[in-house]
Image 1 (cartoon, protein in one colour):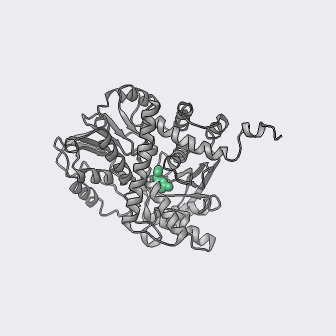
Image 2 (tube, rainbow, N blue to C red):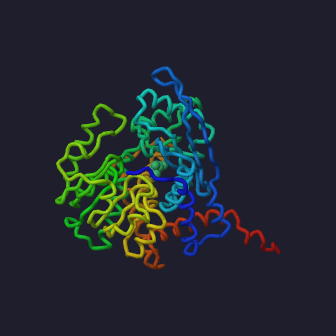
Image 3 (tube, helix red, strand yellow):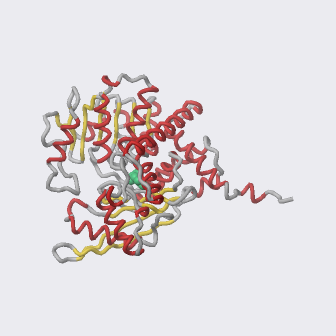
Length: 434
Ligand code: GLU
């Protein structure tokens, strides 16, 4: 997979607002506000490396909008992290939270680092060091981080511990996606994949898909990719193509996903914090590239890796009729247009991958209450919310005769617009009191 160019990622992200504006109930002034992130923090994190040397890592946290509540969003560790990427990801979080009707605004953060090159101790120092730098910026009622690419429950646990020490008060609600014994929620680990699975379930009902005949390709075999693969496979879908950062594999009659996951994880046994093995190593299948995977002759394509994977260069060759966006921002605006013209159904990222932040919300609620829910309770609530919001957006799409992404943005914009308008608009303030 090529690292995406994030130069214009934020500009591309906000361009989607203008298209949705005409279908949303929102003031033009309020729309303008959403084109500018509320706060941006850049930090330098000095880390003493195992060999005694000192390295300085650059980190960011962007709070995009907090009209609907404290800002919420993940932290990623990747060499691609830069300010434009973090701004775009924070922007998407605002819309994702509004699509799910969660009482949150959006934020995102990250550190520019190849985490796979760090030892566990270096990783812990980096994670705690980052929290020291951003402690005044985050908090249970202001901004609540969570896992994202190359960060996981253990890292969230270190961060919660670091924050609690600074505040001299145990503060589990400052971060979500924690290990369960440290205040994490049941069901958070597979929540992104499960949320996307609920969307797929609704698509299948709406489109009368015959599940056993439905062929699926998944780009990305990290947390979300593995979990959706597992859930779809258990339902009888044929997963014929899978890939990770090193390449992909194809099997005409479909993979046995549990053994694929076992093999991938066994080859990583030496590194419990990260998955580094490749799905290409141990399974008998045809090797394909990530580019070929996207263009496979399948019914459903699930991009679950990086941004900017479906672009003007390959959109014409995408054969799948349904694209379920588990990654954030996998489709560019130009590609969107091409795919929409061809009548493809794109279930947009801000809905398809919203299961993660939804269970993060449940985790935060449980932390605030000190009362913890069963796995059944979490999964039941997640299923209900995904189903409700999916169908609401799908109905808007039909009613307004627009694509599903524009419908999702329109729904989110109207909800954000309503919150902004509750504090008064130009129209309200210019009206005469008498
Ligand atoms: N990083 C995830 C996302 O992009 C989860 C965010 C959260 O749980 O706050 O949605």
